[in-house]
Amino acid sequence: MPSTAQYLMLSGTLFAVGLIGVIVRRNMITVLMCIELMLNAVNINLVAFSHQIGNLDGQVFTIFVIAVAAGEAAVGLAIIIQLYRLRGSVNVDEARTLNG
Amino acid sequence: MDSVTSQMPLLVFIVIGTIAVASSILVVAMRNPVHSALFLLLTFLCVAVLFVLKSAEFVAAVQVLVYAGGIMVLFLFVVMLINYRHLPEEKVMSSVWMGGIGIGLAVFVLLATMVSGGVYHEPAIDADRKLSTVTETHLTAHPSDPDKLVRRTRERENRNAEAVAMALYTDYLVPFEVVSLFLLVAMIGAIVIGKRELSVEEEETTPQYILDRAETEKEIKEAMSA
Image (cartoon, rainbow over all chains, first blue to last red; front, side, top):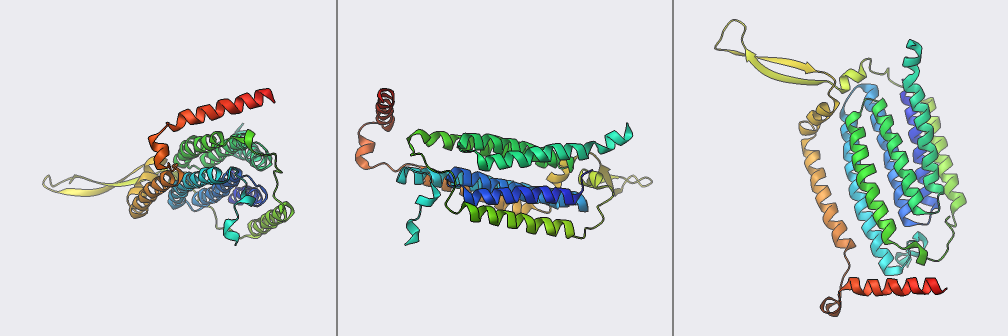
């Protein structure tokens, strides 16, 4: 059976890859995908700890995180569509009106 | 044979974990968002397998249904709504890519040192059984007195989905309702943000899809002649 530490290592790797994607990529859709990747890494952590202490609460929290991720993806993609209509581009570097 | 079967989960973990990490790196590296989305789908499926290994069958099913089913369709729809051919060729990477990779590697090193240097509890001995057992209280006839009822508890094993449902509908009932409200708000928000505002004249005159079609035909013609 893979140990909890191995699971945590894997989830840390996925989280770091997602973080790199969020910072490095310029396409908004890909940035949103990388955020989903990071949330998934957190889910792996929750499930691994839930198995280690033999308690179901981690799995319940994972379901809540999945629900929040679904809502976040829907709203984020709506914002992306609206930004595309407004500017004709999905580049994060161009959405800088709040910059002043 | 016995050693092989006992090593099987570890083997599955190594193979599936490698695929998950590789496809997550490809999500970041792919230029075309459709390819990114498909590699993200592969990552989600691998993570679902990892959930099954930790006896979280219901969460794995929810992962496949919600992530691989719902969110992925949403992403692909948006990728198809946004026409990439019309966007100018741009660099994939942001100007701060070096700093981004540096921060990511720093976070990874931080997490890795925390994980490898951490002191862990002894893992629960029969975690698989605990995570899939439903304890339920029921009333039965008293053994000697027929007019009385006694309370008994009964354990039913191998029911992860039912155990999660028990936790969700008893201990976590209020958060569950809050999540349902949250999903409603998110749905209304997505519709309100995403809908296109039409001006009064536009609503009264030509339907938009006809204008869109004419525009698309013009674009196709231009592309063909170019």
